[in-house]
Image 1 (cartoon, rainbow, N blue to C red):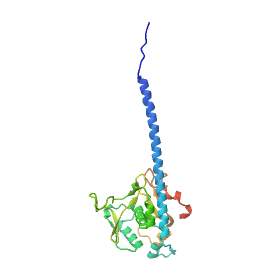
Image 2: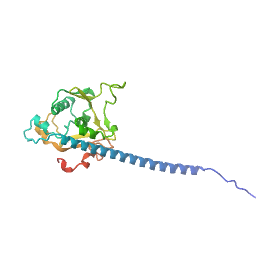
Image 3: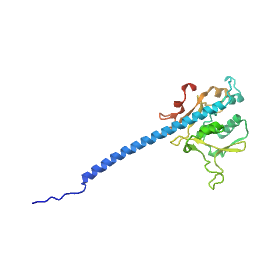
Image 4: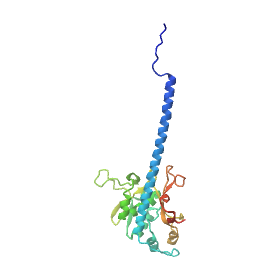
Length: 246
């Protein structure tokens, strides 16, 4: 009588099939995790914009509103008319210093060291500075994820890692870190208070007053980290459209 031995183990074909199944399952898991991560970042971004909206409204309530005639606006009237922090996108250090001096009526205002200043980040940094000057706004800003606050000043003066050359704004002898709010993809948010781009380097105050929005626009460049594309995220989604100037 013939006997047959029971073969135990996997054949080469079995192993190939098993590896293929594992690869398919792994790709599904990775895709799902990437989708979850992307959604989580989008929700975090929207939450940050909502927090900034709330802080801006508190700032507006804190400010004394002043109606002006935009056909003949003086420098003093222009700065008194601003309900929100100034729009300093792409401004040089000297212009930003002048803007802050005019708004706070304090001199001198110093941004130092100037070589560490990035004009692309000036809009959101100046907005954060002015909001942080108001106690109610400062409390609201505390709700922002600390990982989304970019500052060169990370440690106390007592620390051995303390760097006296961190970028800062000095007002009336007090130092304020140059803080930028970034989105979850690492790009600084863009703050726009003017409804149209002003091409002149030194526009008149009447020109600037005519371009002021009813409510500022804050934009995240989104996952592709480029402004002006379809995946941009703005604070308009959470703010009534009527608050904006067309």
